[in-house]
Image (cartoon, rainbow, N blue to C red; front, side, top):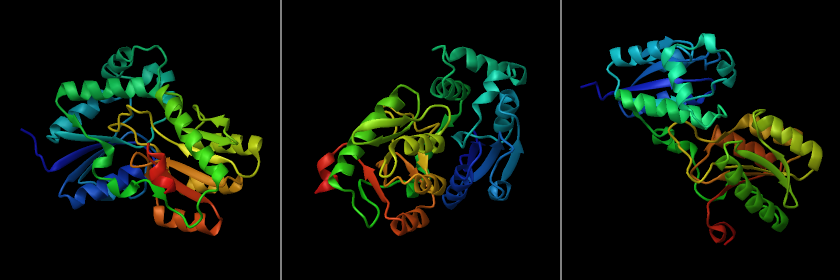
Length: 280
């Protein structure tokens, strides 16, 4: 049996791996971090009880390292560039096996990550929900800022969240930009920030940005995330509302993001499936 006090973390870029490792330590977990990018948080090695670095295509070595550390529970978190899929010579036999199992023919993020999770769990690891140690980044339904949305903005919020959930369900993206209940931009491979810029150019002042997950979203390998960079791009493009999927979207550096949103008269709203709970 493995050491239940250890938590394996396969870490991509961004701040989430460091945040998860730090929170896990508060629960007496020892983070064994396998970093699969060069673009990781500078403090990531310091919060690890063990720190290793591999290319994402070296899955055989990653699995061996986790087994040697007697890992049972494992978290997958952080961004990994999809362009690795275009470089098959970088992939070992286990990585190629997982790509082969992603059978829908689109090489979509979800199909590949689901195949990865299935393979890791067949080996004997338990892949945990990312939200388990990061519930402090989630928000219940409600208006998080001082300014409440206008009536027309509320209509765009509900329209945008519903559209974002449908788009996410098609494994296209998680962010949409809308105005007057018209879609201006739908996130694809370019990412959230570029979708906001595109929507802002088309819609002008007062666009609404909505971020959501699909109804059957798998939180073991992804939680929709917004933060300071999202707000920065919104300010640059005169967006007035950021709508989030309540309890299903991470808001990074929430205190400062909400403070800055208040300073720029931007509304941030967490939206559940129950419309009346928000506007009552």
